[in-house]
Image (tube, rainbow, N blue to C red; front, side, top):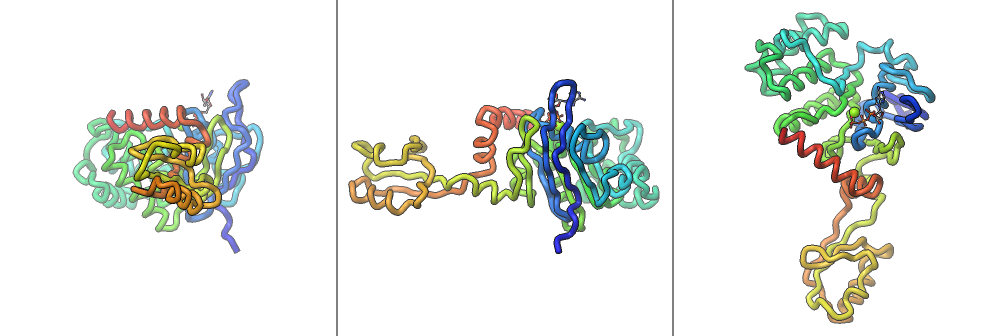
Length: 314
Ligand SMILES: Nc1ncnc2c1ncn2[C@@H]1O[C@H](COP(=O)(O)OP(=O)(O)OP(=O)(O)O)[C@@H](O)[C@H]1O
Ligand SMILES: [Mg+2]
């Protein structure tokens, strides 16, 4: 028997004025999995997470979290890093973490002890007794992240946890997410950075314009598109272009195209027979990035990636 999902939502709808920010979104997060919600700015990720957690109520639809339709009643078993970050600036890092744990029912002493261990493991041991206002933005964000999981919740919900972190801390956060999953927790996070989702997620949902465009594993997502071929002829020119699939484009000294439905054999035979030869051939599975482009368009994806580059260098 499958265990009950950690979280399930059916037909969630949320309006802000006339605007339907979330439009009939379904999500099912298996217990003990890492689940990603991917989408560009304004897609409806934060609104969806806030509905799942019971911070706001949906206008339509139904959700269950850790087996209850009243998400706030299981607050102590949930850890949440909201999109808007904020800690008391006058608190020391370890106190801030213990404080967040205390809000979720953890005793202070245990909270402080765990805070010291977690800060040390995150490379922030030297900052344990620093006030939050003395920490960099990224370090403070990391402290808040640790505070959201110090009570060892069953379900961890992180809204854009990677944004604002440098690559080293992004790597540390990936390790923490994996370790929390290995501990038995379920982790749900939103992001617009595909690399994190590709490396971490057991399953993911892609949303854009308030609608869910994809749901499944990363591998299943990549399998929705045909394999890509890169072919370099020995003899270019002549009638070569006419022999290649219609979608072939010049790329890097050769041609790139989707592997034809029946496979490459017939095409390669024809290229050999007509004397074009094969100087190079590689086949590649499409990336999550390619799937995203197919679903939401190149322009949207370029904007998302420009945003995340700007964050990293900020
Ligand atoms: N409190 C609010 N009042 C009015 N409109 C809102 C409110 N919150 C969100 N919206 C609108 O709902 C839509 C979805 O916003 P949401 O914050 O859920 O997107 P998101 O996917 O989290 O985006 P981002 O990647 O920028 O965080 C947007 O068009 C936004 O302007
Ligand atoms: Mg958001």
